[in-house]
Length: 221
Image (tube, rainbow, N blue to C red; front, side, top):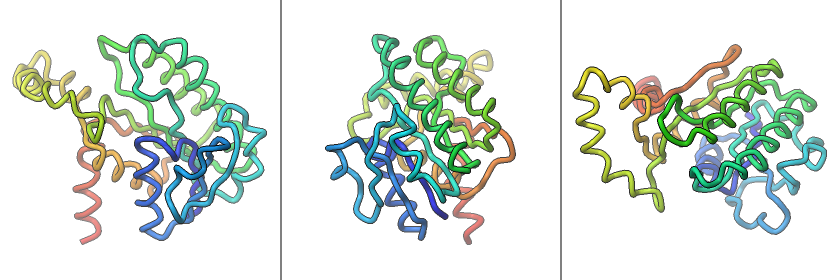
């Protein structure tokens, strides 16, 4: 496949690109001027501004799949203004570019909801999902809550709390929906989302993100 990625220099994109390349896909990734060297070897660099579709739309075609992962790093409650200034216009630019270039298959990393915290982040991601649906794109929407990995390990301390919540019927569903996933699980789920097109909007929630690596290995064997 021909895969175009916006957000390829980040926490997840930096792992997704080599995973896709190892499976024989052609990968082109958008990077702002000056950050091109952060992209993995073997990936074709597209220099542009993620907030302005005109700066990169001509390089999207002939992508089969457009993967959007641009967003504010380390999101938190204090970054509500940045979500609207970066996350929302970046998604709008990617949707515009995908439609113009004829890349009707879309992959987007959203967030699990509803949740008692991070309201502004959830609102912006919900608006982004609505924008993708309104554009008529066939999209795999991944909804993790927190992705564990290097530099993102503090929630390990919450694992006993999660186990307790899952053991209580009244809180089990929320504990599972807002559960933790590893960066390896997330990467494998993203690869699956790229290789398995949706018809309309498909939501890939935390339980599915956890299950996809096992299902993929079973299918391969």
